[in-house]
Length: 148
Image 1 (cartoon, helix red, strand yellow):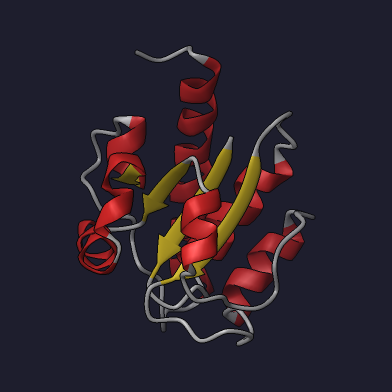
Image 2 (image 1 turned 45 degrees about the vertical axis):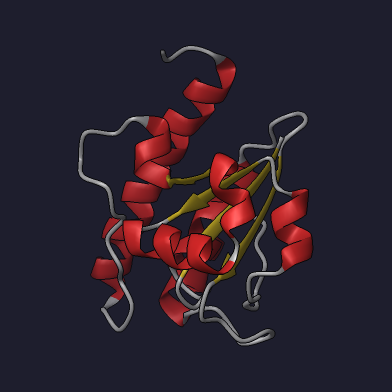
């Protein structure tokens, strides 16, 4: 399964989600991330990088913008917010059938959007990192067929 995480600038949430899921080394699962307003090649946020490295996770150190090629590659596209989903579908309506908010896809009851740590301190990033870690556990259960 090819999973594509989408956020705004691909420097905080989606790179952390990508790293967390990639670190689980699931057979047959490939992960990428991008941002709907990202430029290619910018370094991810220092606080995101620090948390990922503290956890010894493999990660992509630079941002990527959403590409049509990656949208075609993806089996499922998971956005960090409802607004990301709407913006993506405005530009690429053909991927509607495989695009979901991350929380909506894993049937989380904590609301629809993942907390944006952009501009926050390390503790703010840690809250988002922990939130994403929990959601990735739910996602793994869903992919394993353990959730309905």
